[in-house]
Length: 640
Image (cartoon, rainbow, N blue to C red):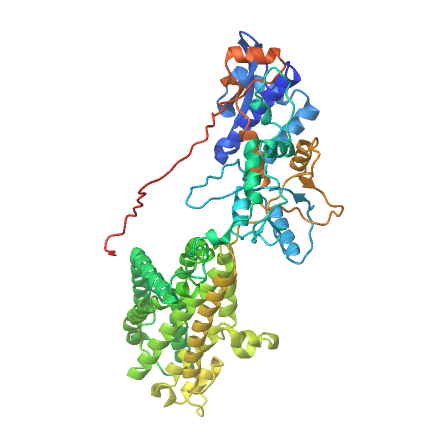
């Protein structure tokens, strides 16, 4: 090994080959785990070659396991020029750390830019990136059509255009002969300027870059392109269409059949997740036993206002426990959203056929959990012994669970990701609890926040629970410490709860209304909101300059068009970002070690870059299928 990270001594063309090999290895290192990536680097060695002489080889090494000689050469290379190499090394190391560990300022800046973008304020530079341009073809019925292309070439964009599901921000125009809207002014990238040279067939002629426009024009003059153009120029005879080719209804199956199918699917999922519901029941049993021993009836009395405050605290605890019993709906629903969005977009079923079984099939489970809680805690804690008040309390516990489940489903439908849902769910619970009237009494809530008191569902639950218990005869037949007011009224005044018996039914009706409202809003959220995580792609200035350089010799319309205004943001149609595009370009460059010695010597003598990597032969192949059978393993216990 003569030198480490030394400059190339070969021609400019061979230097480009070395850089391609090094870039390919760096791309492979980028995919390693963070721990391995920070300790892996690339070292250059010169080996003797029989024909081309000394050749550079790149090898990935673990910098923590170098021997003394390699370590010394590595350090000498890094700090050869202290003023330059040291800073360069530290900047590269920092860039690699930043990629692995996103910083808080970067996250805050992205959030701020997204918020400003919703208001129409664009801080990033905006340009038009061509993805598909003059894409034409014929998809014949009863045939399997294969769409091939490298990453970021526009495959997804083309399929979304054919399905009429492109993002509204993309400009769409009608294709000749087709009435649906399709993208026609975007370019399909065939091969990049750096990758095309290895496919040069005639090695006796010097290589020159063939632009995408020239490829397209040559294809149109080719007999295959001419035949395709002739077929497209003839309008399709609609009389030849099959009568069932066009759907006259939005859903091909009656809605009641779809509801039954969704009901069966939901019941099957409940049986598959039976462990979760058993665990929730066991959990509420354990919490109920602990609560019953903490608020033991032998230790509680009904003598004064302080005793009444202890009973009200027990009611608040029971309400909070049953409120959080529906928290599992948050993660369950978010985990099911990706599949649901696909089925919704493909018109498998209406949204309400999904939400209605989700709500109704949870009712028996909630009734069971409410019975378990009431049987263990009610008389053990020493609440009012009347049977009517027992069943009233049971009804409130059931409504609290249903309201909480609907609330967490709504949060899942609006937030759509666990990170946002955890933040939004915590914020919602804080506001609901804070303005519920039991943490801060109504009289202490500022005037401008009173609307939150009446909007919070916990307000009605707390008032209903308290009125049902405190209006029992054992509280209303005793006097308070002042000697004039009944003990029950004094307790209600201390907690600023309305002293009206009808507030039990007001609270129960309000909880029932919140349950219905939350589930209806959940249905509308699933109906009109789309999944997150598909932002428009962004590219760096270096990538944009490379795209412009690739199209520099093209006489047609440029692929990248920059507007005069710098206030617009960068837009593109595909979902792949600049990192994927850069890795694709690097990964497409192959290792020069795979070439044969004879071919490499001839190509070097002709001044043509050697063919890198392995070029797969392509032969058109037609396939036909007869008696195709498709089997799906059915779960045990399911019969058709």
